[in-house]
Length: 107
Image (cartoon, rainbow, N blue to C red; front, side):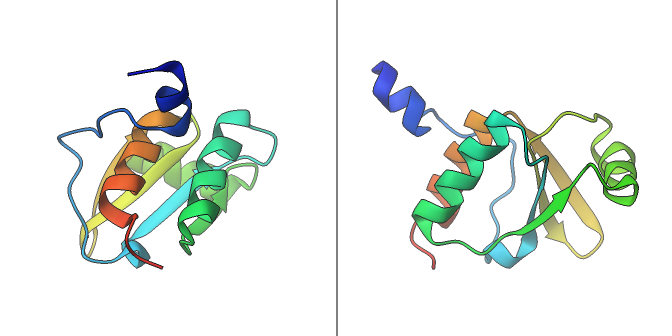
């Protein structure tokens, strides 16, 4: 893989992350000033996805991230496997690879 592929997020997605039937089951926990969050948001825009975003500068969203994912690190993609059951995917490149694989053909 070239450096350009890596920058595009062409790395393999996290194999343990569950597939979803709709990107409506995804939510991105982020901060506006975070360059890694901006990288993920650029891919979301490129793919034409509408994903709910939660700014962890707001205490209730930070608390939800900590309670669910266990870390305050952003970006974090919350994947709803089934109602009330979530998988928390960290690392911008893993999130990008996941979105390209599972949501690349959706709009």
